[in-house]
Image (cartoon, rainbow, N blue to C red):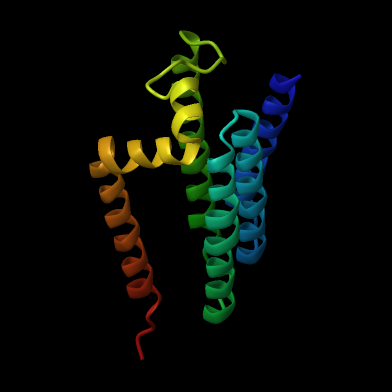
Length: 169
């Protein structure tokens, strides 16, 4: 039964992600992204990762999406009607990238089952120290470098968005 819910939520997340790409309005695209984030949070709950599900809702669906909607409203983004050719090219490139990613997922999925693999986080370790403590220990000890690289990339993305949104007067 969990597998059925997992597949349904995964399918809805993929559909919502496609609607993010193909929505005509920027605001509608952002709202479809909120639905996609909620579906991913439900998938986390079904995979027994409640901490990640709460982070997904609080950080992504809450804070970041409200920031994006606020930025859309403040910048007063309008759709350009003259760039229909460029829109078609970007849609073709997006669909091609989607197909490539789907093929990669199929290749990776051929050798693995849908059940979770046992790793360094065991049930005994979680029962002893708690789920948040175990996740934070791995995040800030073993995976500190990827965590810091991700934070630098996110900061660079915010700086790039500010630079791109400045209007030349």
